[in-house]
Amino acid sequence: MELKEKILTKRAKIGVVGVGYAGLPLAMAFARSGFMVHGIDVDDEMVKELNQGKSHIEDVKDEMVQAAISSGCFRAHSDYQIVSQLDCVILCVPTPLRQTRDPDISYMVDAAKKVKEHLHKDMLIILQSTSYPGTTDELLRVELESEKFQVGKDLFLGFSPERVDPGNLKFTTRNTPKIVGGITPHCTEMAKILYEQVIDTVIPVSSAATAEMVKLLENTFRAVNIGLVNEITIMCDKLGVSVWEVIEAAATKPFGFMPFFPGPGLGGHCIPIDPLYLSWKLKMLNYNARCIELASEVNTQMPEYCVHRMVAVLNQNRKCVNGTKVLIMGLTYKKDVSDVRESPALDIIRLLELGGAQVDYSDPYVSQLRFDEVVKKSVSLSPAKIKGYDLVVMVTDHSSFDYKMIQESAQLVFDTRNVFREAFDTLVKL
Ligand SMILES: NC(=O)c1ccc[n+]([C@@H]2O[C@H](COP(=O)([O-])OP(=O)(O)OC[C@H]3O[C@@H](n4cnc5c(N)ncnc54)[C@H](O)[C@@H]3O)[C@@H](O)[C@H]2O)c1
Image (cartoon, rainbow, N blue to C red):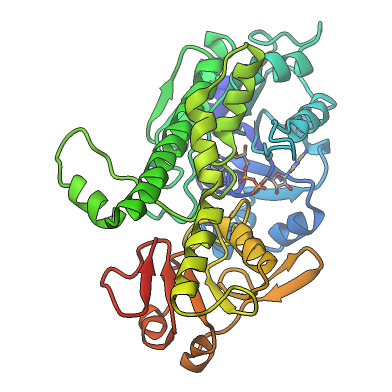
């Protein structure tokens, strides 16, 4: 049976390599619609838990994994043997930065090499990890192609940007439009047919590099606009104007303005990282991506700027950082998720501790976290406990926080997210 027919009749076996924030919801979407899905991940413990019906991602409930397993549509593996039986493989492995802020492509290379060991004819391979334009063609194609397997003839290869927004209940895998771009038109067609089985709108573009660039435009757009509004925040502070009031008023313009909001800095596995994949690639072409570099500089300095403002607030209250007790509300990079990767809260904690502060945190999604040699545990809140801190810093706006209790008990609050809409005596806003 041809690959196309196998996909259309849901007899194609799907592999999702890397079943994390991006991979697991996608694996579940295919399993729910009746495909046999194999999740492949190097994290043995997580593979074991998935096979026991336990999810590690908030957006995928345990019951979803259990239903997929009991309907015979999902199984997780910690090795790649199963690839020899698969028809379609989607790569969702991490694409972080090295310490030098250059792309770390080692996870993609490792996954491609392991897939290659079990490659067979008539397979569709799609990269969903965010990377620089040219990755699918220059890296994956070169890794996978051989005399035996020609892309577009024996193998189909393409790129499809990941658009998952963890915690977003309105836009899920099914109703978030999906871009696909193949190495050849035949590759694009195969990728489009596959995703159309689980996604309402699939938009083909002319090449894999175009699809890669679409993702980087989306994320650079956010990074640059957040950089702009973060700089406007610093300007407003100097001018003695509330940035929040300015944004709210500007957003009443019904055309030509889209509100972005300041914060303590960028976090997560996308916005702080992906634009730097693009600027790195451009450097190789002798071009300096100025907007990206500048936005990155402004955004990276936000934790330091926030701490500078906190020091001023403490000073005004006749307190110094050294020895002061600070409570950080929220450790994760965004509300209602458990992901702490690149979270600005971590930088804020380090900077405050460097100044001699005693810093605790409270986060319902992170029970404990290692900071260098020390393990910190999330503090459970009570009015008396909150009162014991000199400063409470609102970093993440989790829905479950008891804002009324914080407002009524805190000695001093520094709010980086505008969670407190109304002013009160002990409140200072970013
Ligand atoms: N998290 C998001 O909101 C989001 C949004 C858009 C795009 N993305 C992109 O999706 C990709 C994956 O990100 P994520 O957030 O899902 O990461 P993640 O860390 O949650 O998941 C990646 C998984 O891949 C596994 N893995 C690593 N190397 C592997 C290998 N060689 N073989 C098999 N498994 C391997 C890890 O153990 C992990 O479970 C990245 O490129 C990221 O930029 C993520």
